[in-house]
Length: 396
Ligand SMILES: *Cc1c(COP(=O)(O)O)cnc(C)c1O
Image (tube, rainbow, N blue to C red; front, side, top):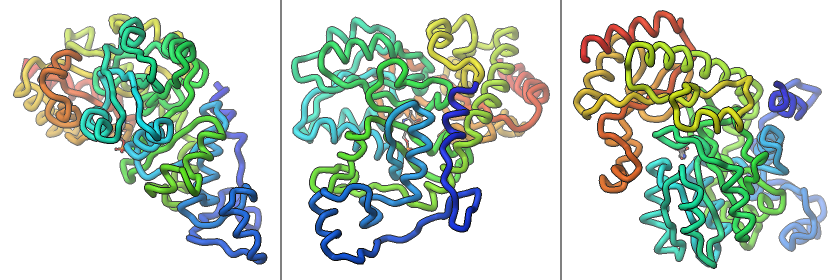
């Protein structure tokens, strides 16, 4: 288990007066007893000193240390959202522009950032089929600086071959940047050659659907660059993490692995029952999933295959009907996002992937009738299955 849980556990920050949880350091600015020291911080010759909370904050630093330990990486920086993490990490790597080869099957917001915002900033993105490493290879250009993928793709739940992509990036002098939002604790991308990992902490890392946050994990030098006073994209565009949110996430990391195992247990149970009953379900834990064996090789088995599953209802109307009934039966809530303790459901084609044009949706095999479920761990899996089955039979 252990490896991930132990790494999280061994990071310990005491509160003032020996408290078992750290304090929230809300100070926006820090005092210097010697004015010369402040000058040194601005010149970068006095590392480790707190100056101003957009530059660094002790509570955000504590969260970063714990997240970095979980990822087996040197350092991490909490930021304001998952999108801030993705945009800042990539702009820091490509300050003068350049080329990215990205999986086509990614979160709709990331797709829109790459397709609509980055070209104007001199960053070109080529989208390729995530299951085909040779497609990534063919798309590489001399100025390709980043290979980008999600470990488990949103919303299709395809699994990326991180080891092969890491090798490709290394051979071509590029960096592998991985969005691990769907699989924290389940998969440790640094073990397979990821140079940086980005998270929407809004999802599983928070687990309570009560805040928006993100994080960038990587080498110490890279994380320091992000807050460099003269060149840091987080420092100079400003989407920092609030210390109160960092404090909540610091505490929630302790039970993230347990929550992930609970999500996996209930999603695995439901997926198996659905498949038996002939429901067209996609779940990485099922042998019928095309990358089931790959996932098995990459994951820490004790936490299972995750909490996400999809059902292809054929048409948008059928998906709406099923979701509305499931909501009426208190099976889940029709809402975007994921990683909540309760089940959340949405139709990606007309919500979180609607930024992706219909032609591209067809290329990535995103059915208009796809219903995405983030399975919660509250309630009895047996009762949840009975409710689901009743609704399913009413419609199909
Ligand atoms: C939600 C999500 C994001 C964006 O994160 P925010 O916290 O909403 O900014 C990025 N990637 C994936 C895979 C997501 O699911």
